[in-house]
Image (cartoon, rainbow, N blue to C red; front, side):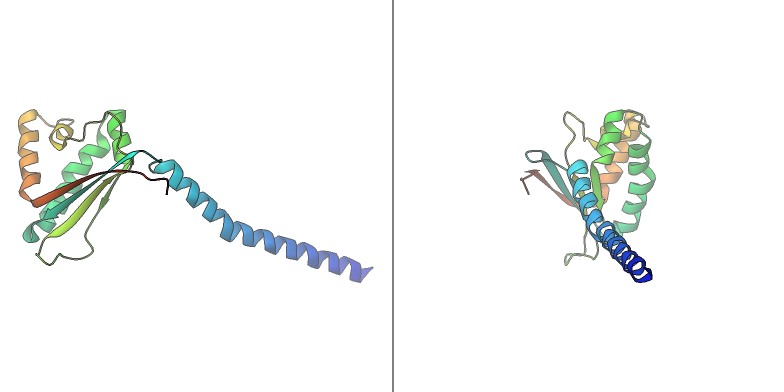
Amino acid sequence: MCNHHLSSNILNMKSINYFLLLVTFVMPLCVHAQSKTNNRSKEGDQVWLIFNYVKAESKPEFEKFMEDIFFKVLITAKKPQIAEQYQKTRWLMPAQQNSDSTWTYVFIMDPVVANANYDIEKLFQEQYSPEKSAELFKQYESYIVRSDFHALVQSKH
């Protein structure tokens, strides 16, 4: 009777171990797949990529400007559409300097929010006067050597 009880416990332990393996390794894969589906573009959605090439000497000031002004306005804006834009936009920072001494920063709008205004000067007007917004936009532009804009469509993959 002891042996039967012992082998029953061993089977239960094996079942528990298989369950733990399932939960540990398979479930995160399912959750990850869901998060990509829920938070990113669906097939046919527009995605924008904006590459900003920042002057070598402007990197620290540009990053400070983005943190202290741009993202502060974006995060504290009262309009729900701007909050949605923030949630669906990623900002990538350079891992290394380019061969021409510039630094590449990339915005990824994934997906683009339908009928939303992505004009940076208009965004600044959420917290600043039109005059101050124009001044801030000129400051933003002063850091950038050039920009590349790419409008793409999400594939089924």
